[in-house]
Amino acid sequence: MEKERSTRKRWLKFLIFICWALLFAMLLRRDVFLKTVNLTELQTLKQAESEEYQSIYFKSNKIGYVINKYSKSNSSAVDGSDGWLLDQQAYMQLNVAGTIQDIHLKLKANLAGNNLLKKFAFSFTSPFYKMSATGTVNSNQVNYSLETGTNVISDTLQFDSPPLLSTSRRSYLLSDNIKLGEKRKVPWFDPFSLTGKESVIEYRGKESILIGGRVHKLHHFIETFSGARVSSWLNDSGTIIKEESPAGFVFIKEPKFKALALSTPDKEILSEVAVKLKGSMVVLSPATEKMRYHLSFPDKIELDINGGRQSFQDNIVTINRERLPENTSEMTCSDIGKSLKPSPYIQADNDKIRQLAKKITSPYPDKIQQLQQLASWVYSNLEKRPVLGLPDALTTLESGQGDCNEHAALLAALARAAGIPTRIVVGVTYHKEAFYYHAWNEACLGDSWVSIDTTTNQLPADLTHIRFIQGEMQEQVRIGGLLGRLTIEPINETID
Image (cartoon, rainbow, N blue to C red; front, side, top):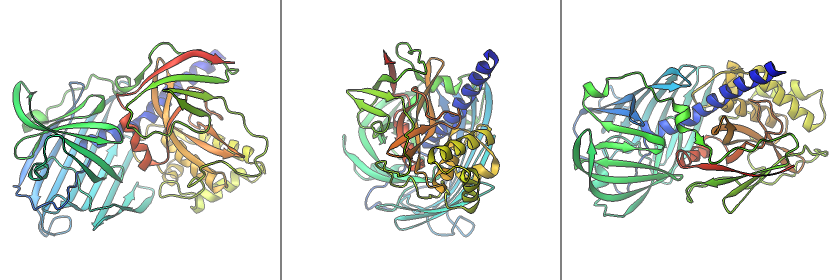
């Protein structure tokens, strides 16, 4: 029994790590390819061909670099049109659980003279995942295709106005004659997550800032996205000299020799960015009925804390232990919405998904039994491996591996194919004096949503799972607003 508990603890630690990986990548990707800016009636900008270098630091520890090459478009560019061709490469060495992982990102994009995105090609490579994506922009619409090596996903994103791709050149912010304290609401497109939303940029005026031992007089802008705040400092030409994002990531424009110089990173990413516990954790028993936590986070972040087994009031979230319902003949949960429909990443209508779901569930007429069998199959048949990329159900099924994100995507697709409304949720779970970001599922059984964690084989999930977001990638990017700004304090009053 002791050996079994020890093995389970090791697996839990590993699973928590790999489930953090994608969420960390989402933060990092927001930094390397920062949120786009779109101002009305942008004028063609006077720019020169150039090659620029940025160093990437994590809490003063050098972890990588970015190379930006700007050239005028010609017949050999992405689409041969007028404007600019951006060739961007990023390389990072990440110390994850004591292992150095190499991350490569490449982006080629055609930009109009005013920085509007016209066409792009993007690739991402990590130790256990490769993807590439291409897309074109037609007015307010982005059409893209994503290839994972085993699957192709195509989709369309609609914007209120033509989107921009964020670059290290932001002279349009200064040419707009923005005044101190003024804000702009702007749409952006992100080639890594293939998502787009609005952000807000505020001008804080010109200020003196110390960078590399020298004082610079720079224009300060603060960009807010789903509660996350990124500071940028621009010179008079509109070039970014420094950017600073949540949780200690900093990008600094530096000479080539300095930017490309790397040393082994000594800061372990996961322990540095985990949500540290305030106070002491309560020892929970199988008989514990409720658990309460005091939460502190920025007011403007949109979260999905209330609902299902959770209630949130006066900064206290209460997690109630769930009971599986007796009658599941009808699904009457509130907010079922998209939880039965296929999506580009949850391919519940794919023949392979449908046939597997039917094979697993056909001997069991009861929906609870069907869900239990599906969850057990996902837990038993996926190799537990960190996959730093965009999770989709079909690729996960064909590769047979993944972390919590892949587990959640595949279970959602199989359950929906079996007629069980199921959604993906993102939040935190507790391990060794800290809370780590994690993904799991909620399924509608009878008249209530029930939590399922297939990476740790929990149905329902334990009372240390705190949900913050419901939905897929487009919604999950909101978790970035919590990074580095969330505190959790257990309340030592449990109800048994």
